[in-house]
Figure 1 (cartoon, rainbow, N blue to C red):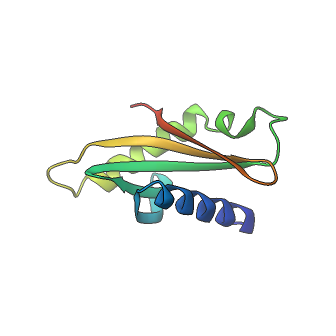
Figure 2 (cartoon, helix red, strand yellow; figure 1 turned 120 degrees about the horizontal axis):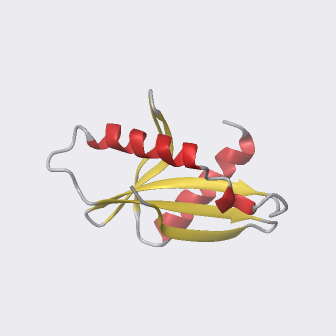
Length: 113
């Protein structure tokens, strides 16, 4: 991972921790793809996509989560959940970071299955 991406994920993890969520896993990888952060919001497993953009010139951070990326995230999340019984409630959030100094936007339920 490039240093900017690592810095964005650390900023997002700190932000979510400050909001009361617990970090369960960073950079979960399997054959289907990668999930930046997996956190716990109470009993809910939250899969978090972190996107960082210096500017919104090309649609900004949210626009960079394409349909193909969403499909990979869903498959990867299913892989992560496969070993859990019973399957906990889950959701997909996005943490968008833009500008300097960084502005953080947290989108809950950003991706729906």
